[in-house]
Amino acid sequence: MLNDQELLRYSRQILLQHIDIDGQLRLKESRVLIVGLGGLGAPVALYLAAAGVGELHLADFDTVDLTNLQRQIIHDTDSVGMTKVDSAIKRLTAINPEIQLIAHRAALDEDSLAAAVARVDLVLDCSDNFSTREAVNAACVAAGKPLVSGAAIRLEGQLSVFDPRRPESPCYHCLYGHGSEAELTCSEAGVVGPLVGLVGSLQALEALKLLAGFGEPLVGRLLLIDALGTRFRELRVKRDPGCSVCGPKHA
Image 1 (cartoon, rainbow, N blue to C red):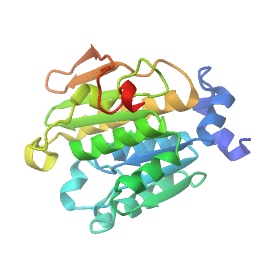
Image 2: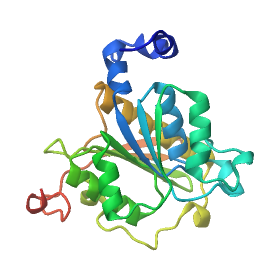
Image 3: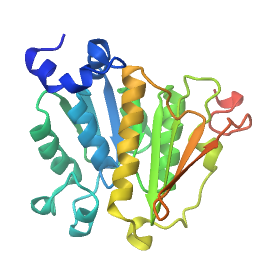
Image 4: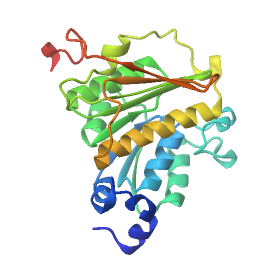
């Protein structure tokens, strides 16, 4: 049940008929893995903690650098040199002491990633490279766990939801294949801070919809964001029957 402090803390959210007490209880009972606590992971973690998601598993092996602070709003100047996980825990505990925070400070290999995914109900990929995204996707497909995937660079962002519980849902590999390790990172190409905040906030919203059970998640749809022109475009994405990750031979 929700205690009196929780009823007050989440009252504005509970007022929504799409969430109500039942939805808030589902959030409290949910466990979520956030992979990456940078520009995308920062708003994701902040909003999910504030919304009352009961258990957040925080995965990042990096430390806070001064160059991060322009966009990674969960960290502050005093956090420079700290691990991003510890910096995030400090901030999230201050925002909502009612939730549980589980730290993953080391890089996740295939086995530890599979174990981490198996312990949660939903995964948010907030990483910044294709190899991690591919590994997270494969682990989610194997475990049958929904994945909310976001990306942002320069002045462009993307967002989609991959849900292996739904037979019609594609996976990340259906859409992007093996990607390209030559893809630029934010440190090489740059990125505007509010864009990662926007994509991360939308990732958090999609997670809340999936966990509380309301609305229409972005399954089978790819949202494209053009920050330069402030334009949003949506593409339909179909499952690849020959996908090497989620195809019939690998189901």
